[in-house]
Image 1 (cartoon, rainbow, N blue to C red):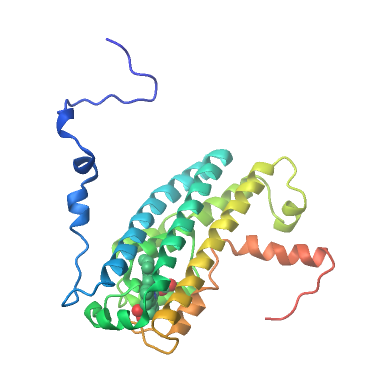
Image 2 (image 1 turned 90 degrees about the vertical axis):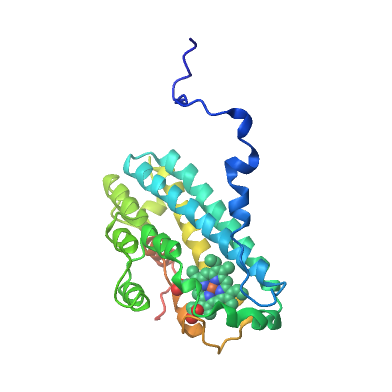
Length: 271
Ligand code: HEM
C-alpha cells in the first residue's frame, strides 16, 4: 500500500465519489433557499439587500476563523505565518467593503417600500460582528456598556466568552513585550533585527484602517439611503454610528505616529 505524503490525513470512510457533486458538496440547494424576501409583493430590490447582508455574515465567519489562527501564530512567535494570514484577512475585509458598496446604488425610495417589513431587525444585532470586535481587541468601557445595553443587560454566552478570551490585540502586545519593545515610536524609528515584526504591525494597522473605512462607509450608506436624522430599526440615531468610527483595536500603533511627528519637529494640538 502506498503511504500518503506527510501532512495528508487519509479518509477513513469510503464515500461514493460518484454521488458527490458541486451542488451536494457546497449545499447549494440549502444556500439558495435562504434568501427569503418578506415584502408583499416581493420588492425587486429586497433580494440585493438580503444577499449583501448574508454574504457579509459568511465573510465574518471566515474572518473569525482566520483571526483565531493569527492569534495562535503570534503566540508561537511565527511572524511570517501571522503576516501571511493577516494579509488575507485584510483582503477579505476589502472584499466585504466592496460588496457593501454595491448597496450605495439602492434607490432610497425602494428601501422605503420594503423597510417596514424588517420590523426591529438591525445589523446592530449581528452576533458575529460583535465577536469580531471582541476578538480583535475592542474593550473600550463605552463600547462594552453599549453592548450590555443593546442586549438588555444579558450578553449572549458567545459574546461573554469572546470578551473574556485572549484577543488579537492581547496576542500582539504580549509578542511585543517578548521582543522587549517598550517604546513604540523608537521601534518605528529603528526596528533593528525585528523588521518582520514591524511589517506585521503595519498589517495590523491596515486591518484597523479597513474597520474605520467599513464603519465610515456604513455611516455614509445609512445617510444616503435613509437620511441623517432618521431613527434606525434598532432605535439608534446616526450619531451613534458616527461615534464608532473612532474605535481602534491597536490605539498604540496609531499614537506612535504622533510621537514620531513630535520627534520630527511637529507640534501636538488639543482634542
Ligand atoms: C442600505 C443598507 C443599510 C442600512 C440602511 C443600514 C442601516 C443601519 C442603521 C440605521 C444602523 C444603526 C442601528 C439601528 O438603529 O438600526 C445599522 C447598524 C449596523 N449595520 Fe447597517 N445598514 C445597512 C447595511 C448594512 C450591511 C450590508 C451590513 C453588513 C452586515 C450592516 C451591518 C450593520 C452592523 C454590524 C451594525 C451595528 C454597527 C455598530 O453598532 O457599530 N449594515 N445599520
